[in-house]
Image: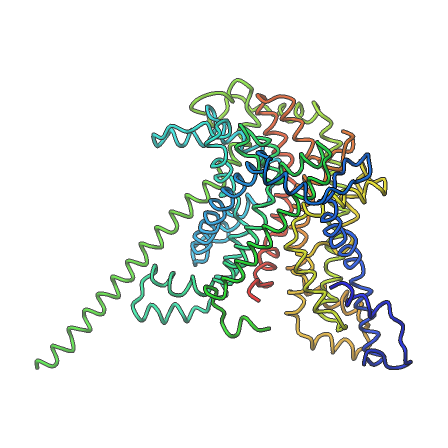
Length: 319
Length: 297
């Protein structure tokens, strides 16, 4: 991929005047293009493409940083899948997190985006408030949520108590720690919601007018117009959500550090430990590549299926 | 006579159903507002509670049911929380890194985005595909080899790994956002400027950038929030406490003492504040920037 891209820059013109069928003006434009993107190109080759390939090589070695890597073939992969309970646990935790969390977040984000796409007094206030939690992601939010999910004095269990539900132990319980993470993630779906909102605003109003003249009620309109028209945005958000969900790290590191009893041992948390606490760079690289393949396959599957459920307006798809 | 009656009745019923429809839509609107209010409360209450905790004395944190209005407002929590660990130093470090790295991201992503939006060159579309594909690449895959590269450069325990990559293209997502926005600016403006003798870079600087405030605001907000809250890279690269950034410093608070929730929340409030301030200033442009960039294509 990169080869064909770098050839025009590296090669010298054989014939003066025309080269690659470009005129002098076109050549200057192309030169400027490559000049402007050169920082990115350098980044891409040295900090993305190169590392992806060398991670693949490292995944076939044992490497503790101090001693040079020794080639071990597929041993790391064999060990991962046959005898590493922590790895299998991290796969399980992450799978549950993705399967339960992603649809919930998408549904919540779409639901509120629809509500926020109305002409109501103070709507811009509501939009700001719903986006607010996404602005402050990170460690501070993780700390806040440890406190919110605190079993005896926490906010969530207080409200649950008000409606007569005895709150669980949340982060202290192997059963409830992961649901606690999902509740927290529902709080900060603002980015997804804003993208949905932008998509909703692109739906022509005439469609709704026509539908309501035909006597379709709000709910009918939602499923017959809104959902089909917004499927490209659903696709986009779904892919982004899947990719991001596999990479959750900060909250897990801060809030539970994988516990209790590895109930929140997310994949990347284990990957971080293997690489930077146990210094097993080869083993970590194998884990990184498995993560990469999982994400690639899932993304490909989603795109594959999209032909069946994503609806493109003629005017929107082409550019 | 009878025909007349027949005509009147449907008209009457139609009006009645319209009235009914009107009432129904009024009711759904009220329900929608109520749900929105409940949602907004859910979004805001944790913030309020965080602030509330940060000004309580240590006795009142552990009351059940919680007391929302503290008997004394204890602002000392803030000065205590910020001095027990070198928080001021971390705050300064983070501000410096965020400003330098975000500046790099905005400048270099907009330049690269401009090249992809406006300049023609062999291999351009293929390279743009490469940009998109790096958006799908989890950074954990490159984490180990990149660590080894930076280690060879002697960059461990320095801020370089947090700053230098930001100046190299600024990240695929930001390039994508900029390029999409620039493509919505009519080419005629470029042509007119060319006729007036403007070079490609001057067109970028004097025509494209001033018209692109919404997307620049969006990229700036994303970038600042991202840099400010960055956790993985600092935790990998920074060892010396005096070089820490706020995100990994806050973690020490948790290790230090797990019961001083008023201190912890005071530190959290201070950490969140810069992002909130930036957001409120850029908010209008920011939302516009996302909306016009359109993820539809």
